[in-house]
Image 1: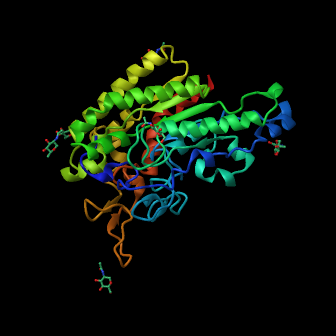
Image 2: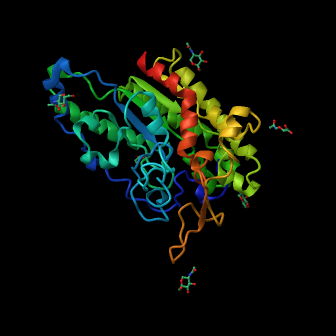
Image 3: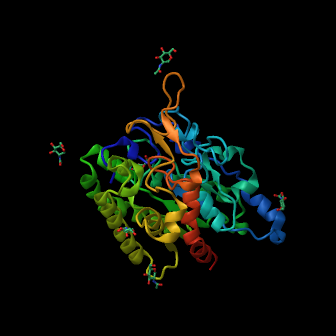
Length: 373
Ligand SMILES: *[C@@H]1O[C@H](CO)[C@@H](O)[C@H](O)[C@H]1NC(C)=O
Ligand SMILES: *[C@@H]1O[C@H](CO)[C@@H](O)[C@H](O)[C@H]1NC(C)=O
Ligand SMILES: *[C@@H]1O[C@H](CO)[C@@H](O)[C@H](O)[C@H]1NC(C)=O
Ligand SMILES: *[C@@H]1O[C@H](CO)[C@@H](O)[C@H](O)[C@H]1NC(C)=O
Ligand SMILES: *[C@@H]1O[C@H](CO)[C@@H](O)[C@H](O)[C@H]1NC(C)=O
Ligand SMILES: *[C@@H]1O[C@H](CO)[C@@H](O)[C@H](O)[C@H]1NC(C)=O
């Protein structure tokens, strides 16, 4: 539902080849085949552990899977990204922690390792699950060559198969199943808007996107064996700075917001049919808290937390520029706010750590109880 700007792609990538993140599934042999050996040795004495968390999605969830392909293509590996946490750019599209970190925290566990760095991860770390989400990804292909959701699930299944091979049939307690978090934040629509004619063209894609998302959700339950699947709805996309900048940050784009609402209604009815008893799927409502902070200026508690919530902390001089841009002499081509804790948006499309914390506070208890029952 983005306007014409390529900046609307969630990772801020131009629509150029981004091969780094898309290594072939053949390279996807991560988990030590002896993953179940330690399980056996430690037997029942093993401390009860949270079920693993497997994350699929885009830059709202990515914790470092997008390769570093230079400042212009992959902003998250450059200043000022990561200023708040981990105090250096490390591939998160924010000043600090992102949605994945807060969902993990809500479940009482540490953030699962990013797929990209799985080879350097300890066995204990790998037991917590893995994050396959990558900035720029969509349900459909978004022209960035990032793995779409389906390809991310392929990686998971390849890994699962390999782990099973390493275990005795007699000891085949499936320790890979667990919770899936699926974060789809609108790259499909940003890409459609770029490719075709803006927001209304993007809206025409909603049935296709939701149908394909439904298929991937079904697959996570019926084929990948996830016990619980938490899936986000769309935030009010028309309130992201890429839309509000042309409006002088004074209001949101109503058509893009209507599109997000339409996507959410379609997703809601898909889930109701797929899982009438709400046994497996939880719709994680990010729309409501985003809207409360961004649209509802007068509601006392939300308005005081973030000053001018439609204006990003990190703002490029030029509307075509990006957060982190430098000129040929290394001079910053952006302004940075004094305190990202007072801003909802970090850059043109991504929330600050403070925003994610505030959003997550609204669903922490719901997620926790859904997973533990
Ligand atoms: C058994 O569990 C303990 C404590 O969690 C851990 O330190 C140890 O490495 C485990 N043993 C194996 C063989 O993985
Ligand atoms: C997702 O990516 C895979 C692998 O590149 C591709 O085969 C598939 O067609 C894509 N799915 C969609 C819905 O575009
Ligand atoms: C797309 O926009 C261009 C120029 O704004 C216009 O000429 C064309 O008819 C539009 N196409 C569609 C399919 O709406
Ligand atoms: C399942 O969840 C939806 C959305 O929260 C709710 O409207 C519905 O009543 C729930 N169904 C059951 C059987 O609890
Ligand atoms: C917010 O409050 C001001 C004055 O108290 C009022 O004029 C304005 O209409 C309110 N805005 C909304 C969105 O309720
Ligand atoms: C970069 O520095 C050179 C040498 O000082 C200067 O000539 C040039 O104009 C500068 N470029 C920009 C974009 O400021």
